[in-house]
Image 1 (tube, helix red, strand yellow):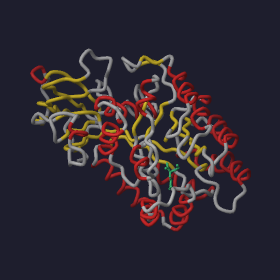
Image 2 (cartoon, rainbow, N blue to C red):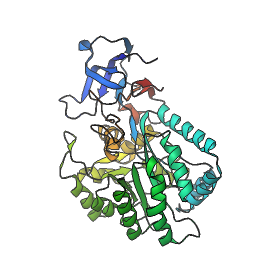
Image 3 (cartoon, rainbow, N blue to C red):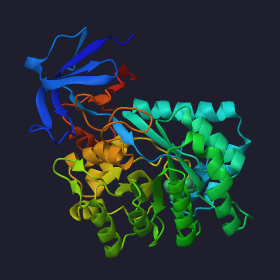
Image 4 (tube, rainbow, N blue to C red):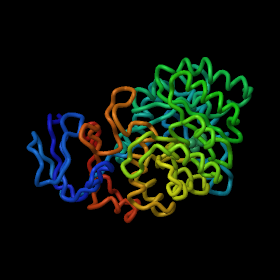
Length: 408
Ligand code: NIG
């Protein structure tokens, strides 16, 4: 049973990601939880009394990962497609139809069971706030079913009916379906709408209609953009004030400038102000599709806030390991350890607009450790967060707490 108050002490390095503090990284620190919220943070010798005390043994502590981009509601296997790709076949969005067929054939029970197992894997890897999407149903009934099932497991759900025009469907008629009856059917279960704006998926004009319909329905906006080649996704996301544009492998200077222009009312030192459009980089997907790695360094240097997410899905990135994403961002994408950890915690929370206050469902802020925030913490089997990249692939996730409860 979770004690009313829990003190975790002897934390060697506590990376709060709360940049309003004079000391965002504390040494020899302690953190206290009251129920599901953080009640105190400070130097271990000054810690208050608590019902229960846990000695972290000098381990590093940091916020749980915020995985802001996954596609976990699916059935079926595409390892053969992956193998063929590693033998030289290019990735094509058409693989989505293969998963759609398998997903439609699965029972509610099986889809829920599969989703729960994937969410449990993510939690075991340190993820404490999880977004997931629909997008492998692609009919009114099947998208509503995916959304309903997703809403029973994930922290927040995105409607991605505009993932692929189903084979044989008319693109214009399908876009109208997404913007009309499909949106109405999923609306009770979702907080976000997304569109795959890419050649072979949805055109700029169709994407615009999807975003406008979502906006009218009161949903937050996100865009899959600039993944397979240059395109309108990033610019559209900036124009619509979307919370994020995800993938961003192929960005022009104008795209980067448009994204940077959405961050003019943001104080990046304190991490406060009015957020713009987060560029969400998906390194595991980039590696699994042998795509050019997203230009995270260039984006950060231009003043764009960046998130790292797993994009766990059966086609392009079948991993929910945020440790892997952080290590890749440091080793291959030119981010410092501090930047990569921030992008996988606070950056994800920004992309989901849960970095402060309360989310739409009344959940507390996540992605940083501060009094009043949700008690989402991970302890590493290492003395510092640098070990995530210094010892890539090693089992560094120690204890994980979600809303004050140990989940690992
Ligand atoms: O984010 N880009 C579109 N959607 C997924 C791929 C889905 C699939 O191939 O099944 C992605 O990479």
